[in-house]
Image 1: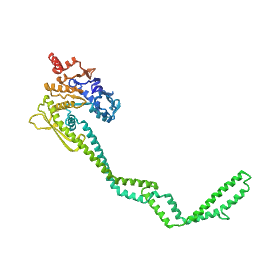
Image 2 (image 1 turned 90 degrees about the horizontal axis):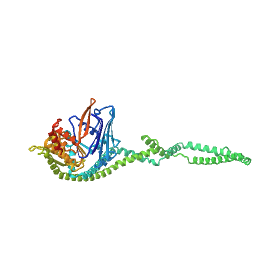
Image 3 (image 1 turned 180 degrees about the vertical axis):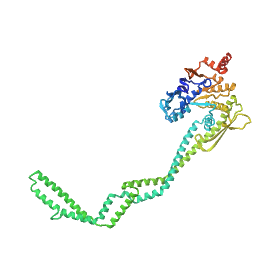
Image 4 (image 1 turned 60 degrees about the horizontal axis):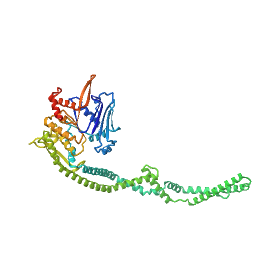
Amino acid sequence: MITSLAIKNYALIEDIRVDFNEGLTIITGETGAGKSILLGALALVLGKRVDLSSVKDPSKKCVIEGHFSVKNYGLQNVFDQNDLDYEPQTIIRREILPGGKSRAFVNDTPVALTQLQALAPYLVDVHSQHETLEIVSENFQMEVIDALAGNDALLKSYQLQFADFKTILEKLSVIKLQKENGLKELDYNTFLYSELQQASLKKLNQQELEETYETLNNAEAIQESLSNANKLLDEDQIGSLQTAKEARIILGRIKEFSKTFEDYWLRLNSAIIEMEDISDEVANSAEKIEADPEMLSQVNEKLQTLYKLQQKHSVSTVSELIEIEEQLEEKVNTTLGLDDQIENLEKQKNKLCEAALKTAVELHSKRVEAIPVLKQKLEETLFPLGLPNARFQFELSPSKDFKTNGTDTLQLLFTANKGLAFGPLKKVASGGEMSRIMLAIKAVLAEYKKLPTIVFDEIDTGVSGEIANKMAGIMHQMSKTMQLLSITHLPQIAAKGDHHIKVYKEDRNDITTTHLKILSEEERILEIAQMLGGKNVSEAAIANAKELLN
């Protein structure tokens, strides 16, 4: 319920704050006094987009703040789902800054307008004679039936099943598209993969292949060079080894004389040992090197295959080719394995479809049972409201399509007079009839579920006398279990309120401003007397006002 509304620098309001209580609060005032301004401010708190022309002084900040007590409404999940900070005493603030920028806050945390709009329906429900879109909505009509049928738990179960079903359908759609695209590329990817696989890339060492090729391709020149090198190292008379050994003998004669001479001998000796190793290895290599045209051809073939693959895939190493091979293998296997995934998802889809359909059938059955009860209650409620011949027809039919609330389709037909055929509610009901039907629906709903604060904005227009008394009685009865605000011009309804707020205008220093006042008992008598007989209040009007209040 709304506990207070503070408005600053909005329309004709400079700075006011009004507190609201439980029960039925009546709001009255002359035409043009500013009752619509109050509703406009409340609409901004509930997420309506800003109209900059509504700001009283554009050079100053406009602030509208509503306080709501939500502890008894079970809204924790609603706050969580919309990423809002939950507080039992929730504060919503809208600010319009000079320059036109608008900001919204829930419990002092900045929020997007969409978050505020998602929360609003759980806080306040505003109705006027000219706003009847909700009542003709199939979803709203189904909500009313479900409330009477006690379908809340069943609906939640169905919606979970439906959500899982939609998720599986989306996955199936993605995988089927993936398969369709994959099949187009499968042959090409399979060819590329086979080509790389046949090359046995993991067994290839490109550097070794290139070295082997160069060696085999230059075998004679290499053999000749190695032989010549070996001669220079180890030939008896002129070989480097022989010369070095002679030098070692000479240094050996003097190495005992000095540490320096001994170092010379040691270094030369190490060099000789290394040269002997080199000489042996060069000799061995020279013996091993021989022309092998067949092996040269094989190595060349492998290298040419490797070079072509690298050029084809725009890479320069074997490891990159192996990575591409693994990627192609994964693509091919994924495409080939999609049929198994599709089959598995189809099974899940069918299982979820069966479960959701079973729940939808239960929902339909309970709705069928609830419709006669709702029909009777609505017709009984409308009878004293000047619609004694009002009749409803609920045409509920199961369909093959899943919707957010089941598989049913609903058409609500109505007639207000005997002898006239039933027709769609939105086509055959007048504005005044719509208002009374909405009041009747809300009155019935109040018996079955916790409703948000309801604001009735002059839905009693065109009503008077005993019908007005009956409307007032219905509102008063509803207000015993919920908070209800009624903007009215009818004294019969005004007299039924638990609280009474008057909206009035005042001129000060050539400036007109709107004010709100919570009326005392004596002030209520005067206000209702003026509603009965005009500004010149008579004793009879006063007596009549007291009688209405009592």
